[in-house]
Image (cartoon, rainbow, N blue to C red; front, side):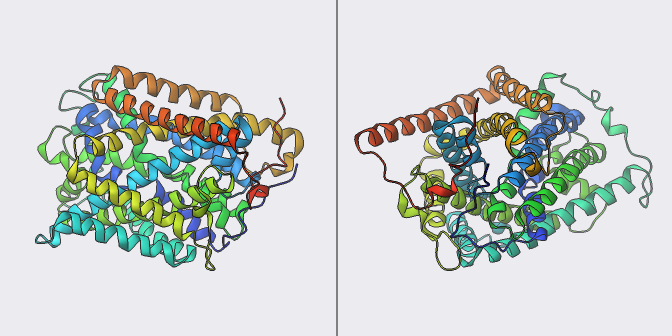
Length: 472
């Protein structure tokens, strides 16, 4: 079994420090700082259990990806793995659903960034600030992949440092080691108990939290542009596995221990927790950190969507015009395609907020779950082939294979079923399924076109793993 090389047009310039921060920054977004309030208000202090459940799932998926990315580094990552393991339809669906997820996130983060910037520039229209934020991050991605890596390293470092400082200060506070503070765990049970609304909100909170974690898998896509792919991806994957639960679960635990879960100020959970510590100008500090998180997510979204679109062109799953890479190793047209769709989405947020934009926002989380399921199914099959043909390539191994992979698939399937019974999640489930059906319909049209006009072999087809044959 030969290892398919990565895309020859890309530059291998991302170093281990870039990859580590890309992995960590990818899963620490504005959802943690702002969106976590939804889970806290629903589940109470037990929100930390919701994040623990989802975090465990993400850790398992990242371990699967780490195994495949170190053994089979290539442009497109899990898009190619799905194609090799499950066939053309699975590859097509994985690639386009992942691209779709990120272009919607890019638009949402641009809008969120505009809201934050307006705190300091109240006279500026929101739409103009959203466009400005989007164009700034687009320019960062168009310079070079090294520029993206450095920019993301700086942005992610701020997020990671902010979480680390919060964990340290919050721990001092609840232990009574903070000035004027006494041991402070009563809020975990004082207002209706640890799980005031029972078990169902904990499970529904786990479903909601899935979208907050999504993004760590970008490290597998960036592996195609790393200078030491196998070693670098392995290191970055391990960093996510060891830290993601600490950053999410422990910080949420501290928030609900410091601030009553039913207090009005829980709408800004981290800012309120820092204010409770007596930190001066806590609101301004957290707004700056959240803006950094937004810019990081937007930056990574443009990167991930452009590389996935580039990979799609190599197999004829996307128009060839998006497959060009300039002398700096940047897929300019693929990057601008994401920007254009994001601009369209921003416009729709003003023109059609309750129809078109609502459809986009409601669908992206479910689509992310579908992608995770395809990653797990791909790992199940490719692991057997690797063990048979090239066991020496398994530098990183999935724990307790195949049982933990089966467990992850079962949890994801239960998430989807649970969404049908949770009133607030029924619309996202239906819209997400509709989005997936649209992708499947697009594949059907592509197949009909190829039947009438057989596709010519595309430059770069040789990178897509044709030498890797999965045998039953």
